[in-house]
Length: 325
Image (cartoon, rainbow, N blue to C red; front, side, top):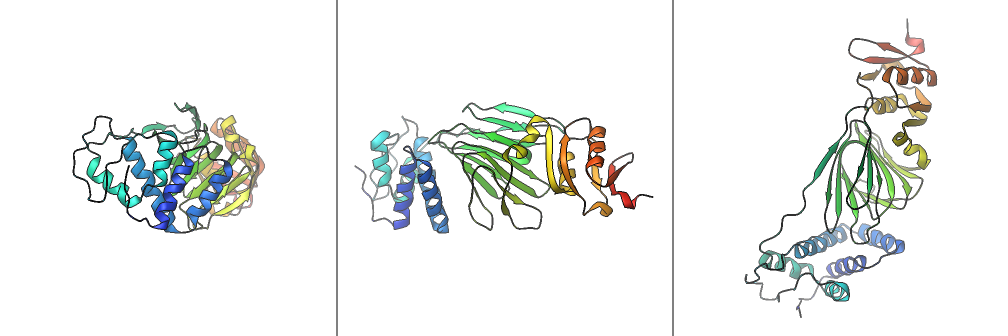
């Protein structure tokens, strides 16, 4: 039996939440957990500490030496508890006591799984099937890293756009780090665009939580998108889910979208850089562009907007029609 010192209420609540989420949480449980997590910065810090402690204990080899001296108030904790016994143990787990166990007793530690890197070239689309049953689709000029841990599945979206169809695993959340933000889910389908200072997180199925911004944690359901443009605050808006995922089937759909954003997208699919002339800075685009040979894509763009394309040896310049001489 493990003995504990009196606990801080936040530490106990964090341990209680961690234990609850190891069982069979329903959507309402996750929503309540997110509400508690957002209530104070101390909540997130306490929960992260509990999660990190248990991950270290899970990584303790069965034959690891346990002869290191412990803190006077800590009796050795047996790792790898499971089922009701594991949850009961978690319910009483104090962060301070657990930290002492990890520091003094967990020797040696196993090295966790490493990241696997995936990337696409300009104009390339790539589908990836992960070992957990999840499916990823990478857009052009996209790079990301994947690590499937036993407690958590992690992805770092370095740059570009990717859609995620995540297998539901109750005890292994799927977390995508994108810049300073984090997108956390259990099982859902969503799309993330992160390029040139623009971030868009769109949900087609399930519920995701986006954290790390000034607005705090934002929960997105089907048909919702968190959008942040360079120099602006993030906003949540309604979107057509299939439109956000259209690029995976070779289409780019726009509805009064600034030309500069359209060009940012096209530049991940063409070899010759495209640039917007200041004369066309206020132009917006509505229509469906097929991801095709680059000259054809530029020609279609000219049909959708009052612009003309001028091609030089090194780039394509899009100008307003009235600016052409």
